[in-house]
Image (cartoon, rainbow, N blue to C red):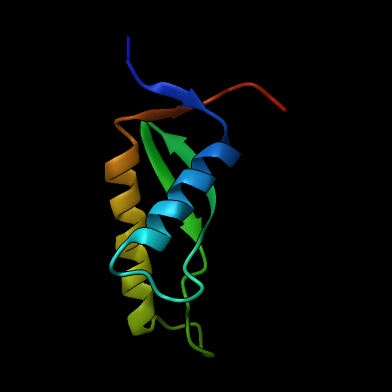
Length: 85
């Protein structure tokens, strides 16, 4: 049994986006827009700032690392609530 707190997607996204904004690597427009959970790991998604040809930019790496940071930071604390709202 896990000691993780159950949380709604909307509540978790609010927490994640506050962490993003407060982080030293924050870049304008960086935001988590969705989160899922697989095998106890929270997976955050959002804009990846690709160029016009769909290729990664320097900002893409920063966003990827931020979402990875959120997964490491928040997965041990939270699990998504299974209640439908």
